Image (tube, rainbow, N blue to C red; front, side, top):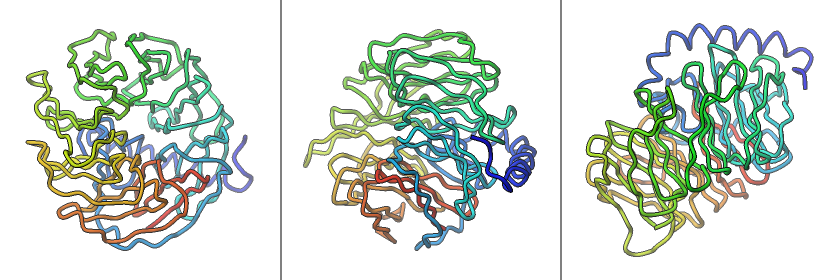
Length: 382
């Protein structure tokens, strides 16, 4: 669909002015914090740390607006230049005004599950995958479709843009590298199971945790495998990268810290009290790894040793991936509540009861937090 009348010039100005800001911020993308003004993709940045440099968010946020998508939102929002991009099971990628939730445009894709949009500034594009196996490139200014690429299985992985290339995983068992310009396939890597996870990226290498129980390092230039580590379990979570280590949970009820230097599992955390899988992807800040568990707990671990520092109980599975900003943890639960926790202690500072499960993850930018629910509502807090 075209941009709604009266909003076209407004959103064009927002996105064009943002381009200059993002070009200046480009070196920051190589860091482990997402700039305070933007949340570019799933987990905020290419390292998938889930951390925003934003400070000053209130300990008890206010509910500012709600957008009704019509069907479940499991996709996590990207926020760039005051515009929110999010997908839904209705099959729509939507662009919204961050200030008031007004719709700029809607793009029709297939049913969108957990795949989350990624924004590419130099080309002014947004990317997302759907459950029909189609990968979409969309003009960020007006919602016009630019190209599509068909894979052989559903896409739940989220895209990561690296220069003129975009990476995406598919349930057909491949990680694909495509040209941003026209969607031409540059290479694909076959694994022994669905590629559910989103790759983390640093130093020209993509890292994926696999449903085939293997963690892989793949060179982005040519798709060559650099090394692999056996995880020992089916993995649905995406690997978070920090200081030459990656962290991810598994369906063997544990969380792994993998050293990229020694290329082995440095530590393995497994709660002894309750044995449940970890589907949530971890956030990393201040030497702490924070991750949700299907045991209904939010877990905080030492990034160095894997030792448990604290847990916070909810009333249902925690499949939402936490985000961290200003010393606080922001995370949803399938109990229908969105929580703000103190990173140092795990103490609950605030909660919002939406009455429907939060399995999507929060996006944080420009003093706002956005997150969707399984009953089709996108909430904005600030």
